[in-house]
Each structure stands twice: as structure tokens, then as C-alpha cells.
Amino acid sequence: MKYRTGQVGELIAVQDQRNGVEILGCVYTSVGMVRGNNEDNVQIWALDDAMLGLVADGMGGAAGGEEASRLAVETIQSAFVEATQDAEALHALDEEALSRRLRDVFSRANQAVLDRAADNHELQGMGTTATMVLLRGYDAVFAHIGDSRAYVVDGRTNQIHQITSDHSFVEALVASGHLTQEQAEVHPLKNVLYRALGQKDEAEDDVDIYLRHLKSGDRLVMCSDGLSRHLKDQDIARLTVAATSPNQLAKELVDLANLRGGEDNVSVVVIFVKDSPS
Ligand code: CA
Image 1 (cartoon, rainbow, N blue to C red):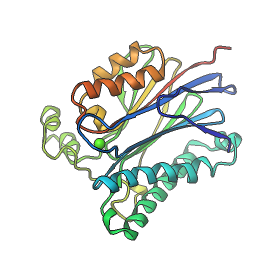
Image 2 (tube, protein in one colour):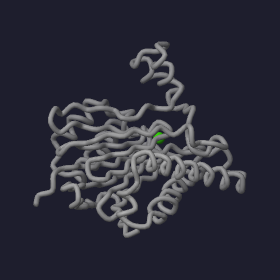
Image 3 (spheres, helix red, strand yellow):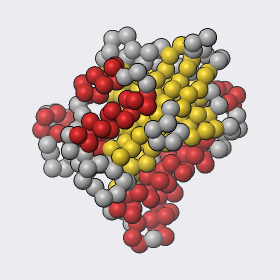
């Protein structure tokens, strides 16, 4: 597979001529204002005329958190990006086959984290979130586990929609009506997850898959909880609508989280889609 990776802050672009779509993306990450190390890992890949973005937020002590999120990126690169023969093979996969592939790749990442932890006492208990999107033209497939998030901002209405659900105990209590959203935001256990990679033997059934068809002008933001803890959905929507490029937006989102305290590592993947300028 021919692929390129985007550096932090670098604009990366693909032209999908078969669908007449231009896809522009950028990743950005910061250690924040409080923590001493960055346990987040973000990556964006241009896979010929498709684009793949990933946010992974590690946990389990300084060394463990960094290692778990790095293993998620490394596994997705080797088991998906490099294992895909070419663009034709990628476009030929129907949604069901693609969903199965992504579950399998997440399951391999889960195993990679477990294996590394079993080999190294200091890394025991480490885990990571993983929120990923693959864009083929306007068709987006998301795979998700943990409490990193994916949002889509509609290019016509400027409305923001959260695609993913947080796999945290507090969000489960909100969903079942036991807590309000306001109570959840200040709850002492708000960071405790009930699903993540590296926490149990089989992860495949714990991965949520979402399929969305996007339109020209739609914008996608994925982030670690270091962003969502400081920026409400409406803050993210406001900056996203006003931005002129993904690299500008990615940096602005991270800067605002840091301005508001930067209590955690903060990472984003930003992707814009629009009709090709041909
Ligand atoms: Ca975090």
C-alpha cells in the first residue's frame, strides 16, 4: 500500500478522483499545562486516495500509558495500513467486510497491549482508548473503544453531532437516567472506563462501529478527553465552523484547551471533506 503519514501540525491532502472528493486532514497534540508526559498518540495516514485518522489515549502509569497508545498506532499501521494491498482492494471492501477488518485490527491492538504488559511487570494494567476513522470519498467508517470522541460538524446547518459514545461508567449512568449530564461533568469517577484496549482477552465485541455518509463542507473532529474536558460541544462547533483549514483548527482547539487549564494531554484529528476543485 502506498501511504504517507502526516506530521503533527502538517496539512495532508488527498484527491479522490473516483468520487470527486478532496480530503484534507491534520493532527495536533500537546502535553497540556499540568502533566509531565504525553500519553496520547495521534496519527493520520493518506492511503492513496483515502484517509485514516486515529486518536489513542493511554492509561496505566506514565510508561504504561505512552506504551499502550503507541502500540495501538503501531498495530493499526502494520495490521491495516501496510497489510492493505492497494487502493483498489480498499475501495472493493463493502461496509460489512470493512467493519470486520476494523474489529479484527482493534482486536490485534488489544492483544499487542496485553502481550507487552505480560512481558513487563511495570506495564501491567496499561490500556488505551482508540477512536479511528477511515474516509473513502464521502463514506466514513468509525471504529471506537474508550472515551476519546468523534464529532461531525454539518457543513450546511453548522450543527455538531457526537458520533461516538463514551465507554465510561459515568456516561452509562447518564444513559440509564441515574445522573444528569451536569452531574457527570464533575463526577469524581468520570475518567473510569468500562471498555478500553488491553483490559481483557477479547475486545472484538467491545468495539463500536459507525457508518456515516458525509456531504461536501462537512468537518470531522476526533479528540482525547483532554479536549472535551475543557471545550463543550458548542465551543468545538464554533471554532470548527469559523476555521479556514484543518491545520489552523487543530492548533486552535488544542490552544483553547490549554488556555482553559490544560489539565490533561490534549490531542485532535481534524478532517475536512469537500467536492474536488476540478
Ligand atoms: Ca486523557
